[in-house]
Image (cartoon, rainbow, N blue to C red; front, side):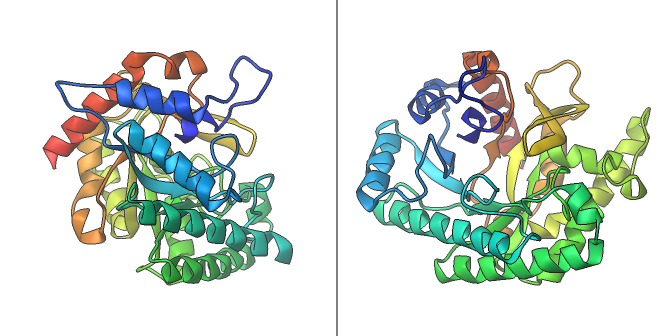
Length: 327
């Protein structure tokens, strides 16, 4: 549901889209009789008050269930300006990061007790910029790992796992090598893993924020692409516990804290760089063995008119069905 919030600004031509409207559009989509099974939630305003009462969370659960939908993964409000702060920031920032995970776990418990949530995890990132991280790479990676470990301990107490979303805009996660370094430093593979998004991980290949980690150069051929993709996915797949079906046109785009990150475009965009189904199978080998029970799609920073277009929802649903059938 977070495409209705991320990159949206009140009073502009791309204001936040309400949770109810996002649920309506989800429930309305259908491809050959198959529909979306559920939704992933961003636990922050205006969709969800992270400090909402138990009754308010139960009412939201009823609202979602009334559309015939389940809840899957949850996005913890770990960023400055929400509940959290940088995982490699000040002591208060890091304390607030863990607090954001605590709040997400509380809501997760209520949703599980309600019955609307049977699977999924909690998404995080480092919540700090690449340039800030680069001031002290080793020291900041160590801080991220320490913060994630503390958050991981909280999650484990609630039967939850944390998945760090691989966007190049986050320090310590901005390249595939940095991502692995941070996960290994955290050292909690049973609790803290990786969330792969096809649009974001495409930029890992290109080394946009880490040229030294690039696996491809502009103008690459198919013969060069697939071995590079295998290298990328072989390295990160063992950590991958959550997945976004998406398309990328090779450009970068962002707003606010999500600066210079992988541009999500429509699944049928003629400029799309990815064979969505084939690329997905690379990531999803052995997915069930890693506890994965669902896949999601992400349209963050889509213009509102694209999100309000039923074809957007049906096109990506059709592609997700193809992914499912290819596994």
